[in-house]
Image 1 (cartoon, rainbow, N blue to C red):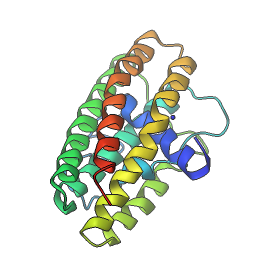
Image 2: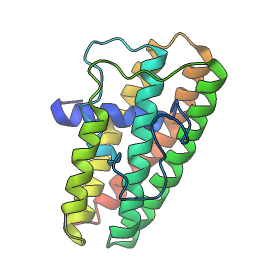
Image 3: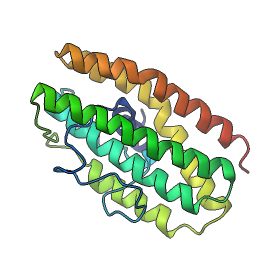
Image 4: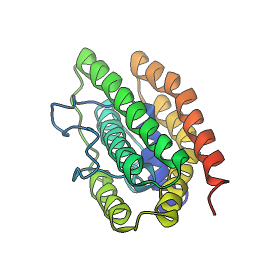
Length: 203
């Protein structure tokens, strides 16, 4: 789950799908509601440059990145659910919105249980990069261009997710966090498979 912009964004998404969001939607990072207009959002493809370059993530860094990524993909999905033209794109957006909301909730619950406070890494640019990508999606006219931009981004990001999940699982020393990440792998793979199948239908 990496090459320059694609690598980073996938990196972030990886974490996104990993699900270990840290703070509750009522807490620090805001909510990942279905409000596509939310300022803090971006689709998975936007979550690139957020991967820490230091090579080391603490549990606090991991939960922060997961929370940011899940929230961003959930909001981007909400936008695609209403702005997408193809039924498959709208349905996929709804799935991303719901799945990442659920993953985020699971991450928040575990973070509270472990008493881990989210702490973005010093070089975490996820929020700003996600916003830039969301701005692009918002400015792209509804139609084939939007559908393609959204789905292409989802494919790029999820391709790197499984590898990123492995990295996060290897870096954490907390068994429960590692277990949660590993259980999220099938969800990530399912998102990638679906995005790729939709991508083939878009011209």
